[in-house]
Amino acid sequence: MKYKNLLITLLITAFTSLTVKAQNEAEAPEDNQNVAKTKILNTRFSNLPEEQRRKYLTTRADAHRFFSNKRTFETLMAVFEMRTIFEGDPVAYNLLGGIYVEFRDFAKAREVFSKALDMAGEDPKILFNLAELEFCDNQWISSINHFESLLKKIASQSDSEFARLVEFKIMLCKLALSKTDNKNVTDDQKKEYLAQAKQLAHKYTYLLDSPYYYYANSALAFYDGDKSTASKWIITARKVYSSNLSSVTSWDDAMVEFGCIEAHYGKHYTESADNLVTP
Image (cartoon, rainbow, N blue to C red):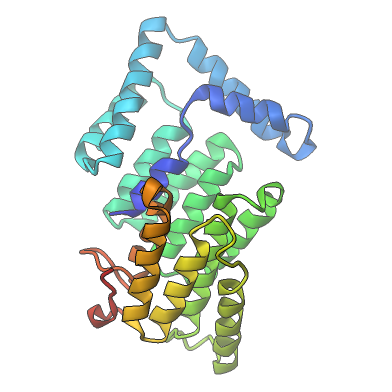
């Protein structure tokens, strides 16, 4: 599934990156525990024989490559080998969690991502994975809570593309809740969710160098049942970013998972194939 393309771009990619992150945050008292975990992880890894360290990093690179190329079972075997060589790397658990999402085993994915979070501390990438998992599982309220909590933790990065994507996910969740069959959500609450979703949709204009504007408008058009306009917004986004289509991959993935773009695993909160958009 395309969710894994997003996940793979958010994985911790090297022990050195973890060290840099720890050093940058070392002055924050609340991050002391995370820093300590990072140092312990790096020390344990550096104590491995050089041959094992090289083999591990090679295997991990293979696992990433397999995962991004949708070679799920080869990824699974690589992760198994990683854990045989060195146990305790949150990257291995992030990959494993992605595999469970691929298999739509959300309960197991939650367990594995939580394990990765325990190993790495409150890393925004892992927190995103947990929020995304709720999104994939149609747990809209829980997903909103996770994403909003993440936004607070990355407040210093509020103008980043990562933060924009989080806001877009929140918008989609609120659109879904405005049409939910959940009897615990009142009609007044549905109207409020819709109003909040529209407010988020219009938060940025095309002047922002981000696909947000185009995909937010596409989602609104889809919500209104205008599949043609929804499709045109996505096509426009791909034209604008034609020189770097990878920059819209995560946004496409969000729309696929939400059901706005047709895919064999795509779904929507109404579970109706007639609602799917094919740009």
